[in-house]
Image 1 (tube, rainbow, N blue to C red):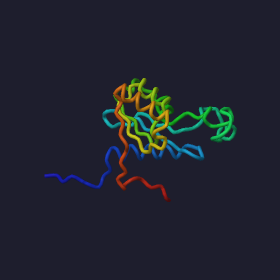
Image 2 (tube, one colour):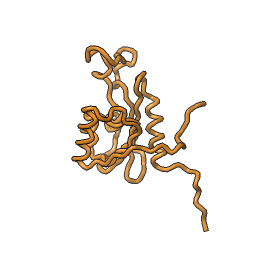
Image 3 (tube, rainbow, N blue to C red):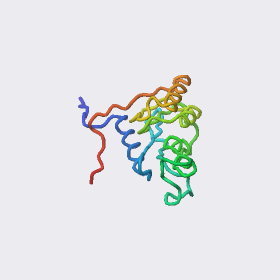
Image 4 (cartoon, rainbow, N blue to C red):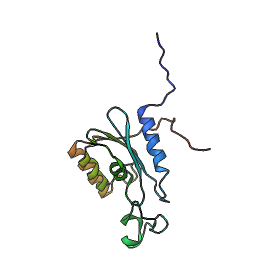
Length: 161
């Protein structure tokens, strides 16, 4: 008779940990977001974090949050979810699961739906109730994309070295 170990982390803890680690690559001084796309067999397919497109220097493009659009980060930053989708070099993402540290905006929701991701596990929802957040949830509901808030277990990773 074999005894099951109980000291390992769950798949949700593992993949949200990977998304959290990816978020730490972001140079955004205000909001670091990470994403991890996982197959139905719990294999990591792709990861991403929020940042500027390749070739657009983090030192040249603006990180400001206020002012004319062209002078803020919002005109240039690619979100973690979109980067994870674009970083995928395989075939289809149909039926996959996305772990993301912040609930997706309405623009990323479109990409998530279009590429076939069927489940979303998110860490925070700091924009809950905003127009973009409401639109994202409305599209997910209409398209049958399930979403659930990640419930912290107290066993999350710590990077204090």
